[in-house]
Length: 236
Image (cartoon, rainbow, N blue to C red; front, side, top):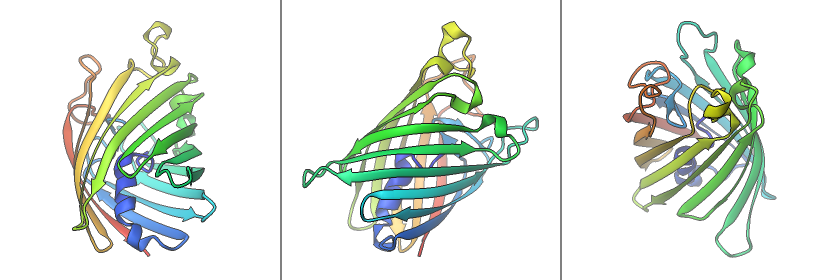
């Protein structure tokens, strides 16, 4: 789910001039849907979109969707995610805290539905977040994800970002038979973006530290180093 990635967070920050209303939305066309280093569309393009609500007291809610391709044996063609959370600043410190719950749903493949609680801290430049699921990806085992990154936007519309994340927990525990199929692993990404009015263009590289036999270079659930390009339209 990319709504909670640092990359899209940067895009929405760059769109701040168009997001003064309590309700906002966006549509994205991307060359690949990457989730924590793994392609969710067999390295093919995806169409994505979301609607956000934010209240001045700090409460927010979001709905987000994307096309999927998990291979011929899967009935999951769409992902729909739902978020509720609360975020506030620590006075005038420039540091914000954020807590919430994210529900991942896959119409046609409900057995993979799961939820995550998350909490994090951020400044204008840096962020860190901890996520926890007691039933990650429907495998019946718990998992943690820790991610952090850096982002910066210039007044001329250009911006850069870099992030790294670590997936671990019982769902990735080799001693317990690797319920999710992979050992603990790192994922990473770096991007350059440009905002033009209500459009945001981004070129990004992503990957993981997984090696053979867990490394997949192309196709379904590819997790090797690769490049992505996306265009996002924000509204209103």
